[in-house]
Image (tube, rainbow, N blue to C red; front, side, top):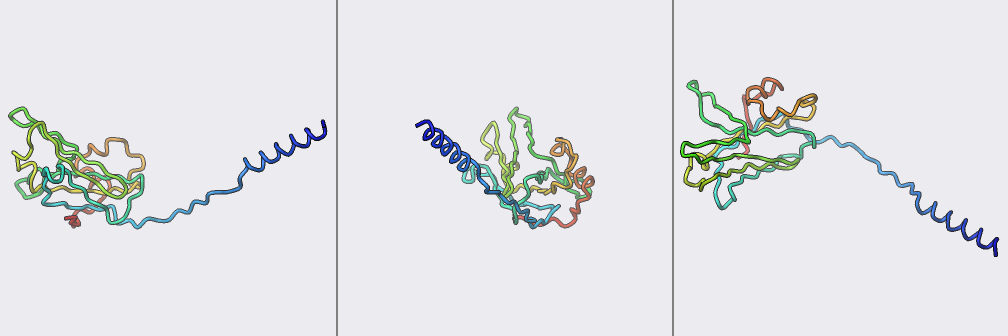
Length: 174
């Protein structure tokens, strides 16, 4: 009986070792993603309405890499020489009447969204909710090596100069 118990115990332990050890190995292949950036995109005529929940959503032509960075700027106006004034978003604008309006954005590897919110009915100020122009900059991860978290706070011109991005021919998204 003692011999039978010893053999049974060894069989159970052996079976446990066989079952718990797997030889499946996950093989990871890196596939280069089609990259069309650094790139500058213009997004003109954006309207924020109740019908779109005051949010504009746009997909990318090809998925980004997880580490890539998306920056979005809103056209605030033009200088005397006609050069546009780009302000980074997220942005809170404080109105003279004490109300405020917020532009914000988020992004994933496949799309981005721009949203508008306010402490009042933003449809009453079409200068902030209708026919808005945005500039979207895709910054590749390799450009961002060693960049601190202040990248999103950089001015449009600082980003363009720092990463030597050609913004002379922005691609239209809309």
